[in-house]
Image 1 (cartoon, rainbow over the protein chains, first blue to last red):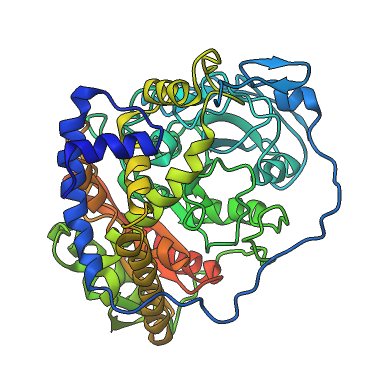
Image 2: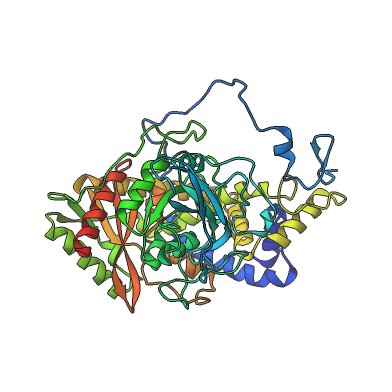
Length: 89
Length: 433
């Protein structure tokens, strides 16, 4: 069971934004879904990596990339070739 | 042969988010063929929205690998099709651009999330379309609209340029009105691309064959059980009967892991989504974030205003299922369940060459009928297992119930997409004749 304050906390962790009047409905829906997820408690054992699987690596060599104007074209706010963001501190 | 295709469709079903009135094309295997592309696949110079306001104004600076291949073979990209926001749904009702209607019955949903692609095909607006399938998003709308759709083996089609939702599950795949056209489109898009590190160099280059004598068709009881409309089950059993008449034999098989398939699927896909969708912050693309505010305030504000409720619900579910204290109970268990389901299919596909069942447990829902998220999730029960196992699965129309199309699903071994295409082709050719 999750409570309304759990839902507000999860929204905060996810940086997703939730309005006060959405909280009761999200809480009810979450609890119905989590109850359905309880069937996973019956899964026995741990997942082990399958045999014969290998990582795919490549050499770290410079390759052509998009020009700076193309990369910045969709950004809302730029300055001197950089993207401006909200304050972190 | 190169030129420009004039494309101004009568789109009364709202299948398209964007149309390209003058679509250029060149020489090649698909010279001049109009292809519609789901709006979560990047197209250079053509806006790409994922049916979300969070990507408003976004024009990709590059093409997805599959788009490069389509252009190289001469296809005319005529537009971008409607979908559930970020692919999260089975009805195409969560689109920020309004729902798509089902051409077979405009009071019904087309299925989803690739509902726009399926509706554009069913309405006769294009002969071929691309969709994407994370838990059934190609096969569900193909079944509901009465067209053909293939979810390829995981790793057979490059995901480079596909705007990610759940990387370990999703594949781009071909949709069309005939199995032959699905196969033609698959031959163009399934070519190796080192930019997708989960890809194997196993190109698809196949002409469908209707000779299925000796094919062993596995029939899993779990695909005909509780929750499946008995009339849909009956229609699909008749379709299996057609394969038998063509020289195939049936064998009973079992996928016991089906009982936790959906729970595992939703834990994994929401977990992956919660991390993938963190990139939508109004900084590099989409509506500009207010940079005078503090990071968390600005970020929460823009995401609340521009993501729909289902996207926010899934991001929150995934965040919860991966959070400290719960990851062991949900995510780790889901991975264990996924492995058991993969093993179930491997075992079943030793006794059988393909596995057959319905694509969807019911026919298309009414618009607005499904409002509760859990009841919508349950509709993915017959499609999500193939994504968990990474195996190919095709949906081909097999008749109607209440005047609405029913989809016949055929699944196969990894990298045996050709075999499921052949089985579907044999069925289609027989019932058309």
